[in-house]
Image (cartoon, rainbow, N blue to C red; front, side):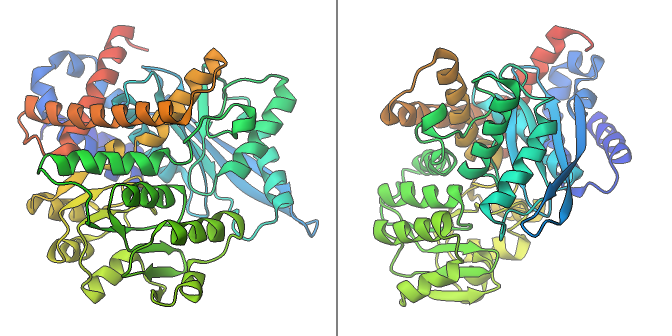
Length: 453
């Protein structure tokens, strides 16, 4: 048994019933095999064993009172995974699917994603099994305040800096930061994704979606292709999906899809600026369902209970670029094969690990340009890092400056992935191995420098 397989076996034994975490560990560590021979010092210092073990795992009770006066209880999490290169940094997710394994998978991925940005940020993640959907603003506020009453013990601008994720948008960040500020009596950059009025950065909501498109543009450029007139399929309707659609359209692409938990819409005429504004109002203000889109734009079709990838597979819809932006493991092997058969030449992951291992194998076997989430969706945490810098300097950069910095970061991530893949014996287009190796090396060398801590 190889050394890497031994590490994976030990990790599986220590972390039973956490399939998402084990999936992420396997995906990363297998691609790190070439580093074992080149860096025996990492083996001697047990870096591979240490990097899959969180620094600490915090689980806590979150009691709150709903509008009817009934006491509810949820579970809160914060996984501080690795702070070798900077304060723990990673979002908070509020969703019924949240459990320890999910948060550990997300925190583990965050280590390498943050490393790729070149900014001084470690890896962490947190959240709760609380579902903000269908809750009143008062209920969400009461939950967030209870959640923060425990979370604030463990975070700080130089310790751990959370942000938003699924189910945690501007409203939730405002409630969390407001309560933190009141209890700690300080204005500090302890959260990112804040409103502009109280320390946020311009284009932070747009950053993950923009970044996924910028990364896709870099991949396409290696084949001398651009966004002009390409058909783009996007899943989800959150910030990532909305702003990926905005930037893809701005660059000349034709976005045809959105979905939420109820179903999918396909608009063969493309979702232009006016239509996108409707979607943003529907989801961000009215908090409606994407099914309402076809009432406004009847040329579109709605598919109840179907994902974007289900519809593309079943209807044989041509797609050039796929940007999965909903959730983990949303594209399976069969759907990946359908994408390839329907002309897809590039996949840029807007969500975290949205493609199953079998789907990834399909993309790689067919030489599809494939940008893994830790590289392609690093735009969000990149601008979070820029927000931290602005908070430290008490400055607010103009939108154009932040956007330009984001574009440069995504270009550099793309090049780092290609260079690392080539240096360790992979094809330059193998962005998965390149991203894992490039992200790992920086963290591993920092861990080595600290000794056994």
